[in-house]
Length: 115
Image (tube, rainbow, N blue to C red; front, side):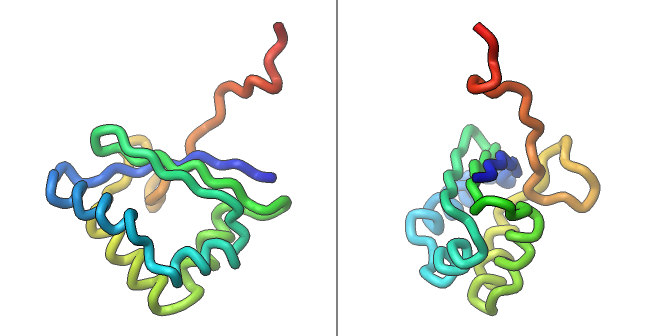
């Protein structure tokens, strides 16, 4: 299993933040199906202030950029959802140019730690 942690910010607008929450309480079925078909095993999105953090687990051997590119191109409803979500978001300050959901650097794994 491949695990990635990504981040993006929501716009500094309480209305946008609440709309994002509302939409994620009822994610469109086409989006959920597309994620699963693309190879996403699990996804968890957390919010602190305006910062979103996504923990995503992919099927073994899959690349996160390819999985999400395939997901975005999987159909018109998914493209519509992704475009709508982007209206609430903005890249994190430390994101690379052109990067939206920025892949966070792993700095510690308990399973690798020596006692």
